[in-house]
Length: 481
Image (cartoon, rainbow, N blue to C red; front, side, top):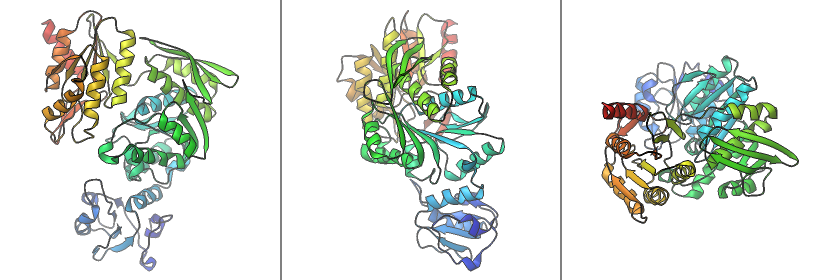
């Protein structure tokens, strides 16, 4: 592809007389080959401009830069924002596959994975071919593709769009993270529908303030044709006032376009009536918890805005499967219940414990930790929440990353000590799970919070295999032996 074609639609300035054929695109200098375009992007932890000499040594024919840099014999292309340029170049390189499908984006602190999964199941029940991009991986129909981020970098994202479009995908449902919005990974994409679930404390190591976090989420709603927003969330209410596209609100308590009434929650799931003007729809979903009411509404209203028949929507929800690592009940052949949940934020932890509290016949035992190299202000908050809502807590390690685990645990303890809850600290997560299984009694519910779908622990910079389902099975077999 000609360099001029690759740069079409960007703010690039360069000597157009030097138009050349570009053989490939890379933003990682290690992937550059002879005749490629290298995009020097400014990352969160490093600056791609430092790697221009490496890219030139590998044969880069052109280099996109923000700052003054020596590009040798390669063509120098200047842009104001190299991340936005990468997004534009990637769309051009793959011939704008996003325009061949309807893109649905879901953003918010909690609920993204479940809502995207429910939307996918509804659309597929209605006979559509659907792609999925998110935390649990990427999918084309039933085909699972690996993924490292909730929302891929723009080049990989458009590459994935192209793969989906080439096999006839009609809709793509994707989780849109605040990082991807702040870092322009999704820049230039037109979303048919964007859904906002909620906003609670998370990622403040990156965004610093909740206002910045909200502003990042708001970017998505300047890129969509229709918006579906949780009106019960205080930030959702602000969002409704701040955007001008066609919007639909949903709620349990606040005034909204779609409202849940007659809500019934049990261990087997939820039942409620969804009211819109004079229309009433009976909703049944086999995932327990008040948060499931919100997730079901977000998915249903999003699909309604797409014109999916209501019979398909509500039948599909009745048949819908839960998501791995979200209020996932693990079979143990014991007289207590073990539930794995991804809850790693204050709100997420409160939601899962409150949900289990509604149907637990015995004690609620909560095992959890907090991730290292992330927002440390939420650690005591989560400790206090778990202590107030649980009967017994086990504070352990999550993904400590480059932090020492025990200082993280001590920060959680600061909040736990504000409550009357009994607790124990066990740094090793496998040992902590073993202790929880040993003390479980008839009717108890043991919540393993924080890992969810993850099958690894990050200790230092090493990702070690750690699947809680396997750990539970091995520990119980050992106990029985």
